[in-house]
Length: 108
Image 1: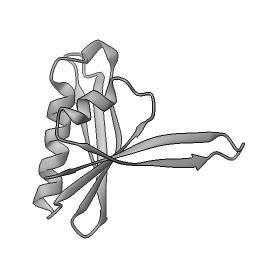
Image 2: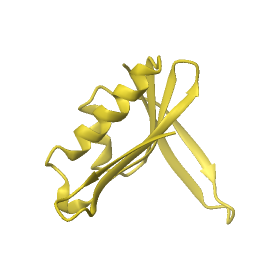
Image 3: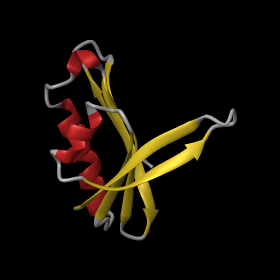
């Protein structure tokens, strides 16, 4: 797994991204978060670029991410970076609560 952290001037975490390779030439973004204070300042773009470079260096040609169904900030971010909706995934928690995530894919 590869992880990158963006720090502010006080060495506090402003954002984080983590991902890995799930199959030959297939990469996945497992975690991606930018603190609200630092959104729309290019930090997310830089974190994604760092992980994508790592993926490309390892031979990854397609990159996947799961986004919660109503994530109105994440979905436009990914779409603006050439991720395309692929399918919906429904899973259930231990308490039988339905969780819907949307799977997005891009070629890199």
